[in-house]
Image (cartoon, rainbow, N blue to C red; front, top):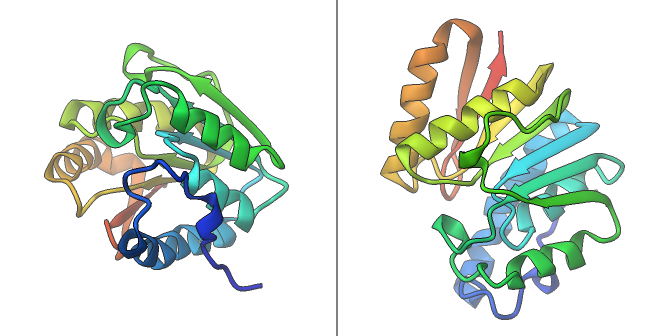
Length: 192
């Protein structure tokens, strides 16, 4: 089965829901779909749910997977406009056919998400240098021995690149890293 990003899952009031952005999203989300399909996760987690587009894509690739999403829903970073729960309500709507659990949580305020054995963990939350590093620490605690961390926006935002690079340098003895070209650049991290 080939993947197609469905325009109907885009939140109508999302400021990024433009015809140009939809065309970009088709190839952008195909990369995420392919990564997820290859990993074939039983358990998926994500920091930075926003409207649920990435979550929907992951669950298209692996519809029987359990998904856990965490988002502050406070309108910061990529969630601008989501502070009144419009985005999170939309995410709940498009993810309702799946085993998806969404938690409103500012991950910068916690030291553990208490989720374990995650096979695919998508990091797309706080886009500050320190925020990215903190979210990566959380994700690394959660992934299984064969788990994968997928980081969004690596080539899109300098702060994300700096945060990821610093985290990788600090943890280089324990991880393997791959770069996947995409609209915004994806980084894959595995335990070694």
